Length: 445
Image (tube, rainbow, N blue to C red; front, side, top):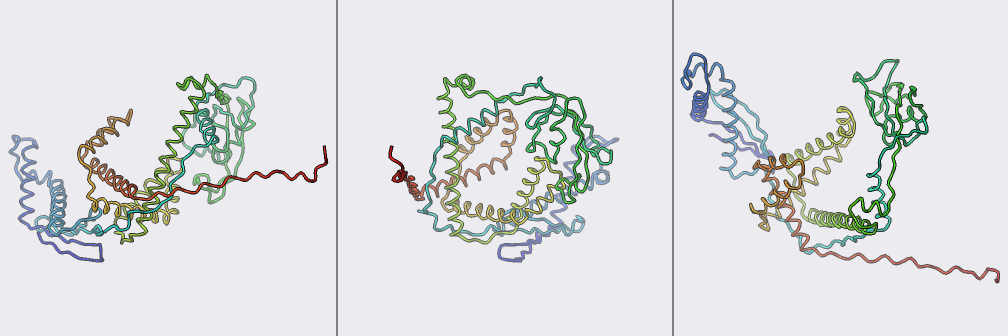
């Protein structure tokens, strides 16, 4: 193996690797011999097919597999021999793949920067105040109440009102041509601007059961929904049944339905849940505050490939979220492009955080042993409910277990920073002074 190392910049390296012909021949012979033992060709006993026939039928496949194997093997070997540790897997470019001559390829990557984390002990951050107000409790119980709502069919009127739920057929037309080729079906629809986009609610409000209602709307040329942009659309709606949401009363019976003895016990349970959630959020804020201080005190050079990987991951996540929210693939792509600067900024922060926390874990010799990892895997699998089998299968893969180990290692490093920090209590806000009204001008009683 011949290896040439180039240094385009401080962190970037490019290895050009050429594999010796003898090594290529040895690997090809091994691959064809392995194929020969398993393949069955008409007219030949198992394991006796001639090499020439194997090359004719399977040559391209075998050579492709050999190239893939040799590239992986010799890249890893070159990295180990030269003590090079890429921050993300190298980008491979093949230059010569005629195995009768040679195999030549390049591996370009960024090194993980050498970081000595400093000034991370005794950091001062404000201690978050954790409390649950009566208003927050009432709002949480109201949300809980809304989740218990039921739909009841309306029998005493036939006109749709805002806030109703209707079983309806809704279609869009342009010049009497249906916009969608997909056959519309009856759907249960909440009649509100919040639930219905594009002004569809206007076609339903005031509609009479069993009679088609129509409304026309013209959309701007740059309208977000591309298949409506620049068009004058007639929405046609046929409401068939009306339903109203009925909310349960928050009383002793409601509390018993939720498994509590009385309303006070139910309120105490909800308050406890809110308090636990508030504590978790406060802990996250403190951790993030400490982490921001550590990052500020430890400026580092960022590997370009690591930032690119983070940007790609964020773009994919945002695109998926937008499509799940109802945007078309094209609209979601446009929104992602509009967010490019923000995504890159966040990606840089995430990359910087990862490098510094990993360096700190190494500095402090923080490790996660197999027993702790196994306990965490069991906890995650058990908590997966109906997805337990999928979770178990996921964590059977070594790379996924190692990813979890790294996550646990980073969390432990953050715990260490927190344990050595100084949390400063925030001063109590002065109570509002209640002034006694000046009644000097009042008439005597």
